[in-house]
Length: 163
Length: 417
View 1 (cartoon, one colour):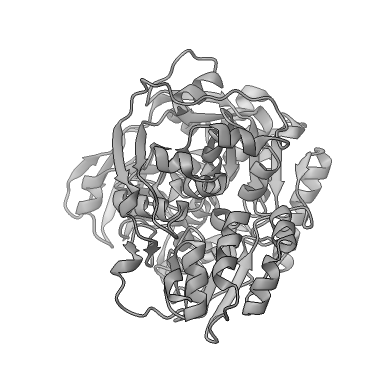
View 2: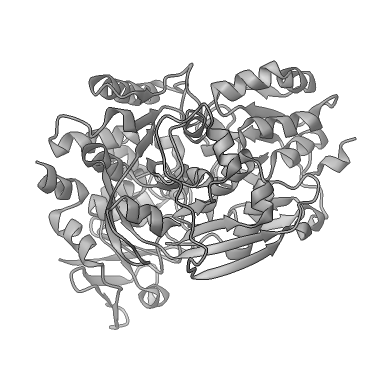
């Protein structure tokens, strides 16, 4: 799968409370989550993001709460993938479980600026920065996780086993 | 320790860090925010039964008692799910409490077990020698159907706490100090194991406070070996047989960190990360507060309320401060009431609430306005955590929160006399 989009870049420790503040968690409606995505750290995000855009974060992206509403809000906002130096572990597994592509590459993150265009090959884990022309290699997923991703998320994976 | 627990639940002789296993879980937990999404996902799987109606716990606690119509609709949906599947451990308002306070209290989390919860503070159960770890709603849905979850075996950092604590220094201060030392991603993708004489000497409440905040260092688990205190705590509560799975004497660790607790002062985590810690003695300005929150899954147990009451006894909450006390469960509430702690709180001008997560996550029952500051015994001080993105949260122990409520600025118990 190949993706291309504009970069929205943020710093280290972007937590799930700023990705989707708890005051909006009384509903899991996709439009509600998308409208308030990143609101407490970047109030213009929801207006400026377009289908396919890419969030680039620093270390420990998605830290804090286990709310799956966080990767869902990002997905519903139209973001095609998140590239970070590292992910908080619950956000990491939630993203895989719901089918939001995520890649870890400190080099790609350090070289990216807001507004850059990135081209991402999810299968190969390659991230190309179209401004600089440089390509970066993300850490590959272990085979077990690749299987979940291939099945289209955890629910489809479990369905195959149980039903 | 985590390797032993995971191996026993996946029929393996031995596991090492990096291995991925599909392990049986002993309890699956969700709250009123995460369960609705899990129910939707569960329904997509196409099974008509949950794996075990006695091994699922659903606790409406975040926006409970329902704060608005949407929250009420969410709880209604999970209430119907619980009824349909005859879920034994659905805790309605009136019997409920904050999930991580009531599950151990009711003997639903036992040594050597695996508990996954669609709530990040599920790591609290590490204090009982169990692998408790936070997951998302989809994991919860899959586990409700299959009784299993996938885990990558993490490497473990062993913390050895030596020496004796100074007065008014608690489990909360030890964990804040630890997070300050290793950072909010210091244990990312790793398990933390808390050991040493200072841990042996901590009460179960203090241990649960420590394990509760392992996630604030990025940890998958905050494990403490089960001992006589654990057995004592579990007497009369246990609902199942269990097998203690403490670390072997020759267990291997990725890293061992020794901490001399006799040097640790009461800790305050400044906004907006739990790692921004300072000892009380390092603060040389008067940081005025408008709210003091005492309670939560971190510090809402009886010992926490006793500590706060001891400081508030005969004192008055500062006229510029709202002091909110949140017992973690109905049992804690009743005990505090019977011990006369509520008289102390109310006479001091503090408000006592029914159990809820409410203010901790900026849900309800104590939201901050722009420019307001709170001292809080909760676990997170992120931007906008307790309300306006322009408000601030300082994390501390019940002793500091109570003393600060009286003084109107961040202060230690010695200043209240």
